[in-house]
Image 1 (spheres, rainbow, N blue to C red):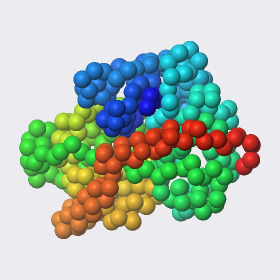
Image 2: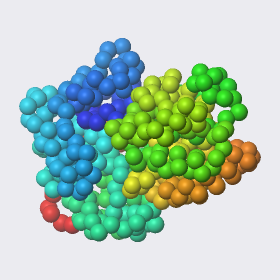
Image 3: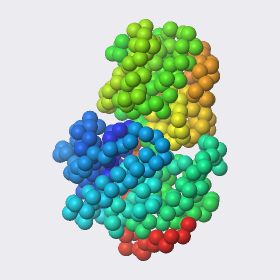
Image 4: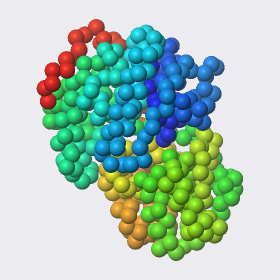
Length: 415
């Protein structure tokens, strides 16, 4: 198969995990793979990890960086999506290689799915598939989140997306969403396939050696905040809870690349004082495999107290499980649902400093509870390995190519 992987964004797990795992499996199957990414993506540290996995760097098409508005309003977000959609269309029209691909796979459709719904595929009549990571309109009916005034509109737009002629398959990592679409008997719901999200560590080292490397006391209670660091990680809320807890042996380890807003927060006078006292350790950089293993090995629990409407899945949840670490999470969304369903830790209102402090106090005093949550996480993580993730995606992609000769479902406008 001649496969194009579209991954304009380098942040989060898009390049360092999802693309990397997919590329490894695709190459093992003998497929000819090309990556379409932005200039920023091609120069990102995560791209170096991908290149290091193979004897030769992957074939790459570099598109211009697409400006994303810092404004989180719906109009600004849609305009950002439209800019990306136009950039992808231009890349498709201007590069002759596109005509040779058997299939185009978009690592994360969320970045342009609204524009995709309204204007169709930016890839013309070429077959494509992709993963929708963060659908929203099902959350209120399924009890995963609050209702939105836009839910009805988003539902209609999603149905338009499913009806796009070139869309062969739509992968999702949200089980309740998949069930919701099938129970409502959406037209073209047979295009939707569920894939287990991935979160896996390459290995672990001893807690004592990891902490010694980081300069952390061996008897400290370490709360890890990991990944791309934005306001939605709830770092400020966690630090307020830590202040309320008043226990100097409980520390927060912040590990990952911070955005501008989080950089400002961590540079504040209060955070500098916490760093000087040893209660806040900041490793504000992209973490390769070795660094990732070290911070998870050093942790006691993992913080998943997302705020600001972050109701989707989290690869860090499964990484925590892989490491046998309990979590403290938001109550709502897919993360909260998973934590409660599988008894992975404590799900709560992350903005409630008293509730977070109480949860920390409870876990601090009950080592048997820590172990129980950690073992539950290990059991869950066994089904969310990188191999299982990449295999299921490549199986889905292979089936798309095999069915290319079958008549496509037309975009007839029916909703």
